[in-house]
Image (tube, rainbow, N blue to C red; front, side, top):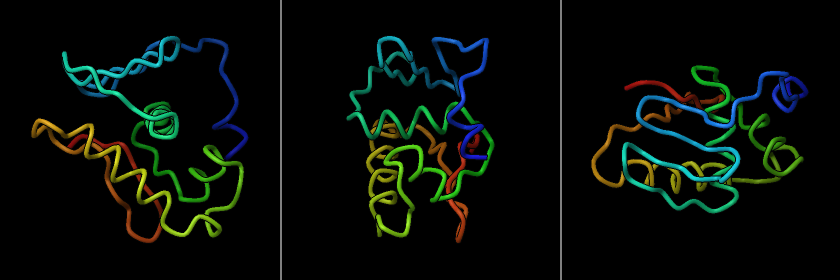
Length: 112
């Protein structure tokens, strides 16, 4: 599964969309509606992973492998911290939260 997530498909698009969130993979620009969102490289990497796999539940191990190439058990709560940072930036103006926590497993990009 991890190898499939890292693999690039032949028809890779330069823009990813989920609801009103747009992520441009060429320029690394992220927008929610018309609002520009400034993300760190790790926040961007996490959002890109989630948006590349909408509705798929991503385990903490899958996220850790994608972002740091190591197992999640070595990261304690680092993944939770980055999810919190990302949620805070995406929902800054009262927009609905699109990142769902699947207790005991991981996270999922999902319409509220």
